[in-house]
Length: 144
Image 1 (cartoon, helix red, strand yellow):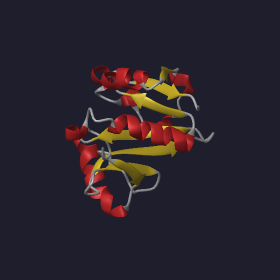
Image 2 (cartoon, rainbow, N blue to C red):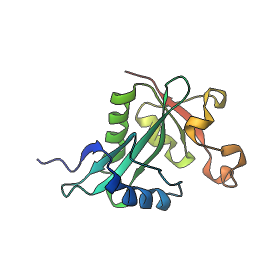
Image 3 (cartoon, one colour):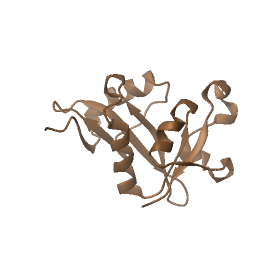
Image 4 (cartoon, one colour):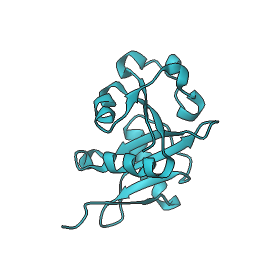
């Protein structure tokens, strides 16, 4: 059976589609393809992406990970997280409340807000007008 998608490094030409997916998910513009990995279909069209940002201690934060809506439920998010962990080891992120269970199933555990490097996470949850609606939860996945 053929794979539904493959994962590769993002390219500059991928950025318009990546940013349209980010906007659809209510996220900021991704400035460039650096440290962005994409899942692509057989036609090399991006169906999901994951960007990593390191904190001052070299710990990688997933910021963000997005799967195109038509591709949810096909293992894209799981594959992107597994790929990111293979690259970076320990992963940290700020999960929106609705995605906490997804991350738990992947092995992520809740961590304290005091353990979060908000600059690397690029989250300003304290000043976000949607904080109560979003229900952000800091989480981490230990290196294997």
